Length: 74
Image 1 (cartoon, rainbow, N blue to C red):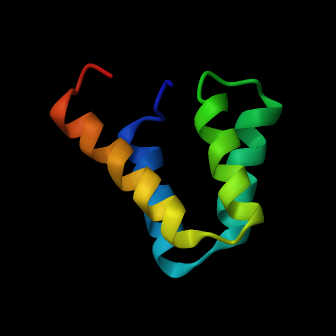
Image 2: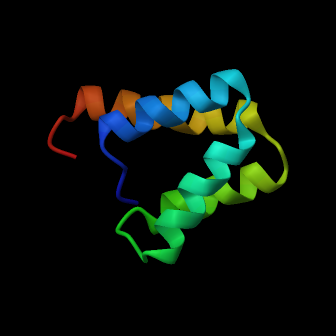
Protein backbone atom coordinates (compact mmCIF):
# COMPACT_ATOMS: atom_id res chain seq x y z
CA UNK A 1 0.00 0.00 0.00
CA UNK A 2 1.36 3.38 -0.99
CA UNK A 3 1.09 5.91 1.82
CA UNK A 4 0.12 9.54 1.37
CA UNK A 5 2.84 12.13 2.02
CA UNK A 6 3.52 13.26 5.56
CA UNK A 7 1.73 16.62 5.15
CA UNK A 8 -1.48 14.82 4.15
CA UNK A 9 -1.10 12.37 7.02
CA UNK A 10 -0.70 15.27 9.44
CA UNK A 11 -3.88 16.84 8.04
CA UNK A 12 -5.75 13.54 8.39
CA UNK A 13 -4.46 13.08 11.93
CA UNK A 14 -5.65 16.55 12.89
CA UNK A 15 -9.08 15.94 11.35
CA UNK A 16 -9.39 12.62 13.18
CA UNK A 17 -8.31 14.28 16.45
CA UNK A 18 -11.13 16.81 16.22
CA UNK A 19 -13.61 14.27 14.82
CA UNK A 20 -14.12 16.01 11.48
CA UNK A 21 -15.67 13.04 9.69
CA UNK A 22 -16.77 15.21 6.75
CA UNK A 23 -13.20 16.37 6.01
CA UNK A 24 -11.94 12.78 6.26
CA UNK A 25 -14.70 11.57 3.97
CA UNK A 26 -14.01 14.30 1.40
CA UNK A 27 -10.28 13.51 1.43
CA UNK A 28 -10.89 9.78 0.92
CA UNK A 29 -13.55 10.24 -1.76
CA UNK A 30 -11.34 12.68 -3.69
CA UNK A 31 -8.44 10.19 -3.74
CA UNK A 32 -10.73 7.36 -4.82
CA UNK A 33 -12.39 9.48 -7.52
CA UNK A 34 -8.99 10.55 -8.88
CA UNK A 35 -7.82 6.92 -8.88
CA UNK A 36 -4.77 8.19 -7.03
CA UNK A 37 -1.88 6.00 -6.00
CA UNK A 38 -3.22 6.33 -2.43
CA UNK A 39 -6.48 4.65 -3.44
CA UNK A 40 -6.01 1.59 -1.17
CA UNK A 41 -5.30 3.80 1.84
CA UNK A 42 -8.30 6.01 0.96
CA UNK A 43 -10.63 3.03 0.61
CA UNK A 44 -9.66 1.76 4.07
CA UNK A 45 -10.18 5.22 5.46
CA UNK A 46 -13.58 5.56 3.82
CA UNK A 47 -14.68 2.25 5.37
CA UNK A 48 -13.74 3.61 8.80
CA UNK A 49 -15.39 6.96 8.05
CA UNK A 50 -18.62 5.16 7.16
CA UNK A 51 -18.42 3.40 10.54
CA UNK A 52 -17.53 6.71 12.23
CA UNK A 53 -14.42 5.00 13.61
CA UNK A 54 -12.23 8.02 14.35
CA UNK A 55 -10.07 5.95 16.71
CA UNK A 56 -9.37 3.44 13.93
CA UNK A 57 -8.55 6.28 11.55
CA UNK A 58 -6.19 7.86 14.08
CA UNK A 59 -4.45 4.50 14.59
CA UNK A 60 -4.08 3.91 10.84
CA UNK A 61 -2.76 7.43 10.22
CA UNK A 62 -0.33 7.30 13.15
CA UNK A 63 1.05 3.96 11.94
CA UNK A 64 1.51 5.46 8.47
CA UNK A 65 3.26 8.51 9.97
CA UNK A 66 5.55 6.22 11.95
CA UNK A 67 6.42 4.29 8.77
CA UNK A 68 7.29 7.58 7.06
CA UNK A 69 9.54 8.60 9.93
CA UNK A 70 11.31 5.23 10.06
CA UNK A 71 11.59 4.95 6.24
CA UNK A 72 11.61 8.44 4.71
CA UNK A 73 11.95 7.00 1.20
CA UNK A 74 8.33 5.71 1.23
